[in-house]
View (tube, rainbow, N blue to C red):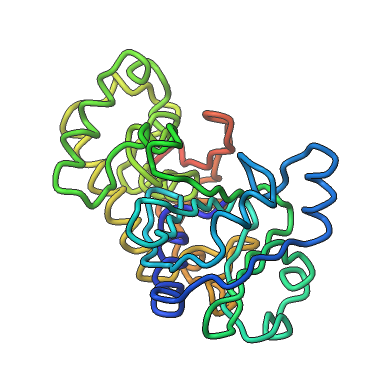
Length: 288
């Protein structure tokens, strides 16, 4: 599932291509249309396809922002927006024709096409259709956005991170489960949590309240550093992530612990455990 660095890279790729353009027309794949007719709101959530189409057509894309793992397409200056979450296999492309999407698996799973005022197409593809997009009259119309914690690069992020870890709902949980929760810190999922914990020398299974304040601060800095590194490397393409140009990221080549079998430091076999519903890789020698 794309995490903060991947979504940030998508945002940076889309912004210069679509900001200031108007959505002339919206169309949907037969798969999405049939799912909605059967009562299953595939890809477009919260309302019907006709309502979504009516709401966004003839709207200007004033800007695109990222909040945690969400993309926010701001429409005009009235607070309206399209919210997009990539799920596990979602991808955005800007093309003249669908044939410019080089990989069959993305080209064959295009589900929403926004025709823009310059006649280019803003295309959403989703192989497994776990992603979603919503038209919102305002951010307040989608309460989950308000639950998201600080962006890791915000000035007060460390203070709010440390405060969240002392709350009863997180204090007795495994530290990896705590830092992957979006109310503790935005955008840190399985890949980057695994890497940050390895760099900090902390076991993913260690209980949150068993970490000293010094170690929590150290872990926070490693989270920030690994997310910055992920952005600089263009994100991690473990399986299906692609940027708006159809290119894979390079962070997967720099990962030290995620999905590894041998620790790069001590050469001990890497252990696996399920923490917070996600498979965790860790070294029992280097991480305590």
